[in-house]
Amino acid sequence: MPESGQKTTQGHIAGPPSVAPGAVSVPAARRAGLLVTLVLGGLTALPPLSMDMYLPALPDVTRSLTAPAATVQLTLTACLAGMALGQLVVGPMSDKWGRRRPLLVGMVVYVLATAVCAFAPSAELLIAFRLLQGLAGAAGIVIARAVVRDLYDGVEMARFFSTLMLISGVAPIIAPLIGGQILRITDWRGVFHVLAVIGVLLTLVVWRFLHETLPPERRQEGGVGQALRTMRGLLADRVFTGYMLAGGLAFAALFAYISASPFVVQEIYGASPQTFSLLFGLNSVGLVAVGQVNGKLLVGRVSLDKALGVGLSVILLASTALLLMTTGVFGEVGLVPIAAGLFVLMSAMGLAMPNTNAQALMRTPHAAGSASALLGTSSFLIGAVASPLVGIAGERTAVPMAVVQVSCAAAALACFLLLCRPWRVARERTAP
Picture (cartoon, helix red, strand yellow):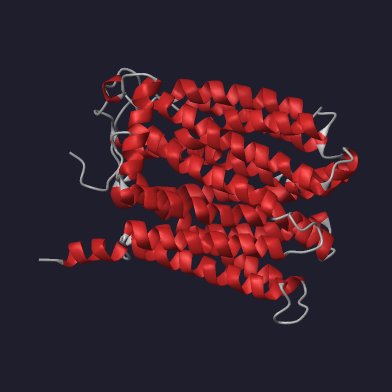
């Protein structure tokens, strides 16, 4: 039997077909573990690729389709809402039919929707197919988390989420850079051509290397009614709901930055698309670096709740500083102080995001797909609400972005403290 917190070899993720599940050799398990890490990293990188490669092109889209900035920002909102709603469907499907089949279907539809986006003649049609792109792309997000829960538990799961952050974190670093370079040789439609090719390659990798991790005996029976009852039971768990809301609200603060930063950095402060891409990549480096500090140094030495509390507190402090700077409390500030505040905020996400996921999923080994769906849906829905709010006062002020970030950060910390009540958990652990 594996020790608590160590990787298990459930399902058929490792070894040749002739080897019985659970009787996998250690070298084969290690090779499969590396392949699974790379595949899951690619799946979790798909959302930032879908959104971040497109960010430098937002001003170009407004001119090309003669649409206002608020309408073009809805292309981000539509993709995000699709990813949120799609997870509610795909998560329970993966608990019933396994992880592999729903994932492959979702990837194929994602590729087709992305290809259509490249030829959209109007903002309205682009919004519609970005919604479909998000609905299909949700399969990769929700099933990647469910596979992690199939294979890991406890501290090891938190470490694996931090490893995934290292892999998937490369996407937001290079995606705006790629998007900026694509705009040098073509227009915004070329971004979607590249995304379609990436989707095809990732689909082939999933088909070839990602085997089933949920054996038939562990799958849930029943249809939509059973899935709804399972989700209702998860939401009735106060602590699970606390982690879900804390993670979702923290993600909304992050997405407020994603939605507003192209206009804040380029339109307000006059930076080029390439400069914006470099700043965005630098912020992503901070997020990845702190995520690795969390996984390699903090997990196992510091409680996950303590690391999470520090991360949420830093996000609140950084967003408060941004609000003070954008409202002129410190006088007129340039791009460097704003960029510094955004860097601190993004870096602190490296403590918040992996630990909320790990803490929530540790409470739900019986329904990892449904739990992953709720975690992802809450994050993307709250983010979709935050996205249009950042542009409510137009393109020439960053105040709405900062207001949304402060509000979401404060609400996230409140949900963590009031619903999860981490001090009680710490007291119970230290009690004789």
